[in-house]
Image 1 (cartoon, rainbow, N blue to C red):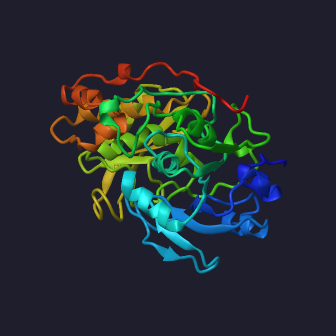
Image 2: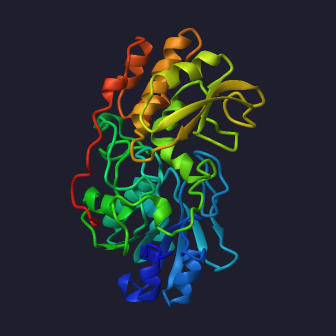
Image 3: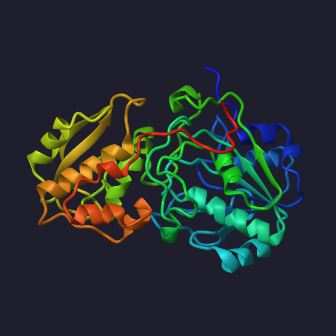
Length: 367
């Protein structure tokens, strides 16, 4: 089967696409060619002069858990210095980038198509730093695994801007990294090395590209499909399945019972089924304790509405277990405002907060 030709493949074949003399590569384990050759190896073999690498949340090697990263180090295979960028912005990030002595930043990380996944905000912060420091910025584009035809969820309130949403995007944003880089609109020398052969309606399984875990709790494509909705459970006291082999597909709590699955099943939500499960998280919420809940099974990718599904699950949990259901402040950051928290605290149905699915707006690179 033919595969989509990614930006890194095109750059490996034509090093002139990057420009610059001293390149700093922003990447992680998803930075690979279709044969799984790591991006730094491919670019060095092509004669590009990499002089430094930068790691996002979870680190260059992807070993760190949520909100963690890896310390500055030297990469043993390439001998290049590796700088940690996680949670750095403004002058602090400028100092790190300037110390690396690069004239061009090259970004090659796979996104999962969800606003509150942090890699695009690492790109955003580094683009801002590049603009301040007068550096070039090159995005090696990759597919959006959720496709590019549909957006879902509200735009965030700018007052709630954070590292899980620095720019007004729907939760399911429907854009590639290159399209987001153009949308952000920084005043800098920007190049997007576009893909060849990717269509907006293309399922990831049609791309011919391997699935590489973007982070430690995003193991499969199924995880990415449900994440825009079940990721909201990070802002509650229910387990979102961290500490299991199916994070974000499993949701439950010690106080849940058989009604959780049956009530969700009765909603007949589009494209999804719910199976009652019991599981014991090995870490994170309810670690070591059996919990009861559901597994989210997507049976129709095109019909499935992950954000509506997540809101429905939150509403059912709040309605069934009002005395036990708990909210965390982080939910406001994930949702992008305090409206969801307010609805849930009042016991009101939040599903009308999710507008009908839309189409991506702005400059789009692919048909």
